Length: 477
Image 1 (cartoon, helix red, strand yellow):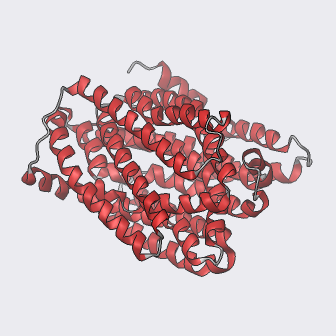
Image 2 (cartoon, one colour):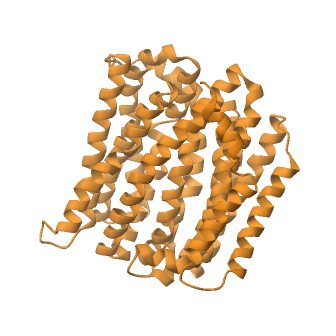
């Protein structure tokens, strides 16, 4: 299992490194530079509003499917067609709820029109994720990896052509960007469906009310968890745009700092997507291997997140100026807080995935409710005065708090030994990064020296264990 995890992790990371950074920084960031902070801030707020309740289209079915198919692969062909039909009904409910909220919080007709397109995009994204959940459950990680980057590859070619050739002869508009995403998602959805049917055959699209209700009874805890987590991770920009006096601009400033965090979080999600079916199968077949798998994945992901967060925190203006032309200094502080929150996010990805595979949804849902209260309270307190920076600090507090609670609960509940030497490694590595900042002379190569020395530190403190990696890749599967 560990060899399968690390070999597929390497493949997926390479694919994502080749595609997603370019899509985010060369395409998405260029769009923001072209349309301006206010226009992009409005789009960013609407995008996150469309995210908030997209779980109503899923209701935990994706996570349930990945976990269930990993444990019972033969059920897949009987599930696809029945659930596809049911999810069309769920889409109608989601669209109605999201539009109603958009009207209730005061969006005008033009903003509601863009929200409608984004709602349709969310439907496409949800169905892509649904097909990918089957690939993950069947351990078809290479197929899953290809589908995970296909929409970004298409966006790079389509949007990049319009942005960099000026073929239209007009000023670029945010609406174009949204429609281009629609086309890319649609092509990806069709491709994923074709690849899945080649594996399991063409499903019969029928609606079975009793079957749908039975699945919901099993999947609703996953749905509630995703909804609650979405609320405390995606309300920030909506609250900024609605309650700050200069909301659209501040939301645009927040988006500049958030973009790199979102890109890095995608790589963190690679771990979670691979670990969920692997942990699920381990709980069913080989529980004794879980601690070793947990430590290996945690050290690699959290150790890397500490390095990245530290380098970004110490060099915010330099990093932001590589991506943006405008409002760099205004985005620096929010960017710093957001990057520190990445450490907590990665810790939550590891332990949250472990607890999800175990089926301990009640605890995760209760913790998420607490996370919402903490996040909204800090946002409401800090946004009116501090804007984007205040909201970013609220994210840091929320992510750090929920991550630590998950860590202690998982070790206690699952009786996984908590080795103090492991903690010392993280403390020592963090101290090294802090020392590098203070003792490396200030010059234009600072960031590169920090990255180089920090990478070496990952091996010195055995957060990346060379012997363990050699063993995993030399062992027969």
